[in-house]
Amino acid sequence: MNTLRKIILTGVALGAAFSIGQAATAEVGRAAPDFALTDINGHKHALADFRGKTVVLEWVNPECPIVMKHYDKSGNLPKIQQAAAADGIVWLQINSGHPGAQGDYDPAKVADWQKRQGSVATAYFRDQDGKVGRLYDARTTPHMFVIDGAGTLVYAGGIDSIRSGNAADIPKAENYVTAALADLKSGQPVRTKTAQPYGCGVKYRN
Image (tube, rainbow, N blue to C red; front, side, top):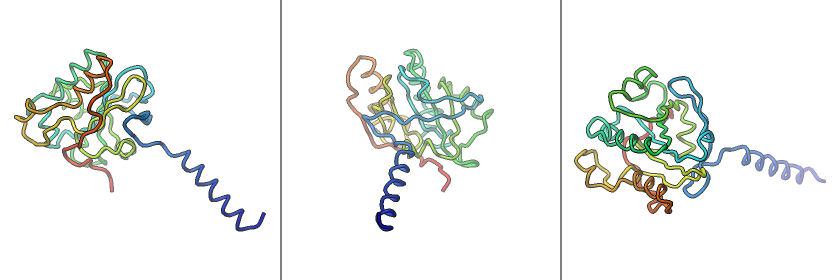
């Protein structure tokens, strides 16, 4: 085997190994990429731990005005979380802001914020290196993802159909998350699978 051919084959092999080693990125209709994070109470969770249950991923930044629209100004997201919890749905909040970014609260401040908002999320994670956020291509706060019991990503996008900062628009909007959860509960395919997310940009480290 000549030297040039050896170099080419080695390059192909390395490229294949690199591709296999990389985590798959999130894609609606395919298996949701697994991840593991430690919550604000020091407990480690992997997405795979919740196989068999519907899971909602909510990208969050407590200081984002659009997040405030759905929390402080309306109580919208806590109400959805409470209804989901009653149905046994796992709700994971993820903040992918870098250390010191807007809304990057320490665990005690997160817990206080959740209590004041009436949040009943299963866990809250600080994804400070942004790895999970980038894995899911989370772009805004909020950015919502719904995963069915088989581990398939069935919805990704904005929380609802009216992309505004006005809490008065919430009752007029179609809520894509509650619609997806209702479809899953009734055993029907999720009708709206993707929608444009809106809100503040996730504060990744550049």
